[in-house]
Image (cartoon, rainbow, N blue to C red; front, side):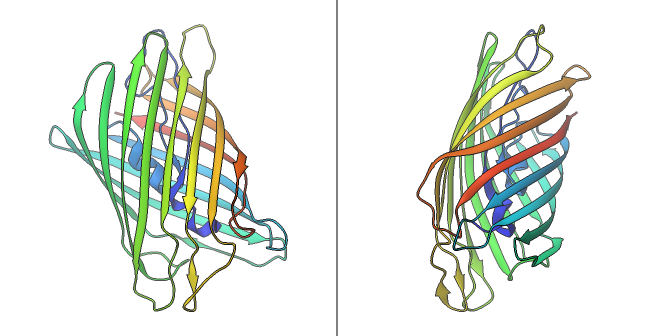
Amino acid sequence: MQARQLKNLVLVLTGLSVAPSAFAHHEAIFGPQSTTLISSRRFLSTQYYYLRKGRAPAPSERSNVGVLTAGAPLGKRWSLSLTLPFEGERNNSGAGAAGVQDVVVGVRFFPYSGPDDSLMAVLTLEPPTGNLEHDALGVGGGALYRRERGHWSAVSYGLARTEHSFDAGERRGDRLFLGGGVAYEHHGLPFSPQLGFSWEQTGRRKEVGARVPGSNTAAFLLHPTLIRTFRNEAVQAFFVVSVPVAQSSGSDGWQGFRIAAGLVWNF
């Protein structure tokens, strides 16, 4: 899976406190799509991702992604989010690029939100605004369900993405991400631990009118996570290490380890 395509990748969650909170989890997907799944209606977020991919004979690549996001409520059950992603990538031969990815607009609907559980549906649009990829309109859709009981909380989520390319012969592969996680929260712990998991599937991308062999991804990953909350849980800091434990990806789409860190301010 190309690093510059990682605006959609799946993972992350967690919790902390004496009584569970509606924002105990950092429910996410690696890259800009992740912040559309934050369960607060109004928030500010800054996130950083380090990713590695590829195996011989394909070149090994590493990518650094920064994400800035703001979310605002639209009435009682709707919310809008806007994400600006930055990325720098380089392979083992020294070639690389840096710039701005397409802006991600998220429309979020909350059909149900209770004290112990909630459901959220998401539509994402990615107009061609960046300078790192071909011109395309990306469209995504997904849902997230959150449940809390005692000191435990859990989430499950899914997100799919496709695109309409405006450049003939150029197209990123369709993607499907399914995942979830369980978190434990207690006031006696300095950090709240969580274990997440995800299944990621990506079709082969197209370049110069032809499908690129080995650019497909099919991987199952585990995501041990730590989170710390501040200011009565209004601010969350998280750290995640993600490791693929099983995959049948192509050599170019082969997934390595990932690291993510960030802050989320709910207000």
